[in-house]
Image 1 (tube, rainbow, N blue to C red):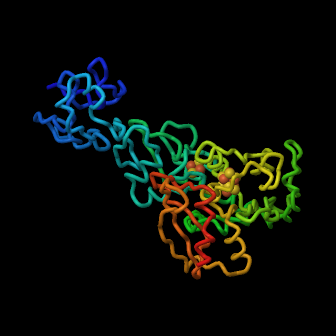
Image 2 (image 1 turned 90 degrees about the horizontal axis):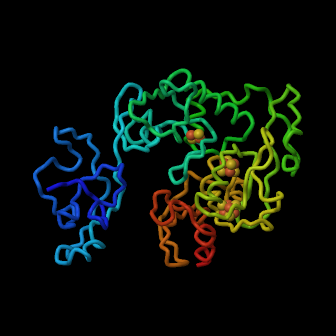
Amino acid sequence: MTTTGKGPVGPEGGSTAPADEPVDGPTEASGGAAVATTTEAGPPPGEGPDGDTDVAAPVGPTVVDPVATARGPEERLGSGPVMLGTIKRRVTVSLDGREVRVPEGTTILGALHEEGTPEQADTPTLCWAPNMDPINACRVCVVEVEGSRTLVPSCARACEDGMQVRTDSDKVRHSRRMVLELLGSSVAMDRASADVQRWMDEYGVDTERYGPFAEPAAAGERDRRHAGHHHASDGATAATVAQPVKVDNDLYVRDYSRCIMCYKCVNACGSDAQFTFAIAAAGRGFDARIATEFDAPLPESACVYCGNCIGVCPTGALVSRREYELREAGDWHPEEETVTTTICSFCGVGCNLELHVQQNEIVNVTSPADHSVTHGHLCIKGRFGFQHVQNF
Ligand code: SF4
Ligand code: SF4
Ligand code: FES
């Protein structure tokens, strides 16, 4: 039996799997039967003829139609095996001298997460998220790739066969420290995640290296700046993005003193999740900032309050109004917080919700990034519509 055609059987009797994918299932000539009927002696899945267990294994299960063989050939054309995963070749990369094999298309960061040591898997990231396309903005995840003129962002660069990656060289550590130091010297990072705080410690970041912080901008001052009209710092103080918090609606606040311009909120609002495109980057250089169209207050903008921008913001620049109020009142207690997973009751989609509770009060709602329905993103009802629970 020729076992070269995995995937739905095409009209010409060949597999409809892409030509460049390795294939190993039955063909129409073999009766269109599902992979489960491929009983010919051979190596088990994931093992090559020579016992090489690194050979690419078919990814994902195959669903077999149990009555397919009882049907005529034409019916079988539409009822062959259904692939629930993508078949991928594997490439070999060296991570600090240790060779690993990963599916083609895996990013270097993905390889570090999946195959790296704990230290390699702990590569710092700011603009990357598991539920978003790589943004490639912050450059804190850089690694050295042999033959590459510059350091490369591991979150966005795909592994190539034979690639030699170094994750902990002086050059890498120096670059990561500079990125964190420049951000920390101009942006309030104290509400960034515990991981970010730890990385700042581990890389020896000195946020005051460029002098004392300059005075904060007045409300709206940074929003009015035009490209090409930036005034250089006086040299005695370090310019910052400090400015008053924008509180203009009941659901969430924008504290752009904490914004590192990672673009996650822009992409979550746009083509990564919400497709509302209510916010974008305005200005240039140090004056670049996230803004609504014409800097309109949120209630007058296109924002639909899904809160997906809040869900991805890595520094606490975007937080729910309730979190902001509790923090302002000195009543924010993350150490006491419990998280309960449930299903949203508003409609039948089945979104998982994580209810963050402090002192018997829901203070935030999120969704797991790996949930197949939400991929971490919610709508206004799931994100903010929990007050009725509190009323009981
Ligand atoms: S709440 Fe939703 S619609 Fe509004 S800016 Fe954030 S992501 Fe965009
Ligand atoms: S507001 Fe948050 S998510 Fe948006 S660019 Fe700034 S730091 Fe990134
Ligand atoms: S995490 Fe890779 S560039 Fe930001």
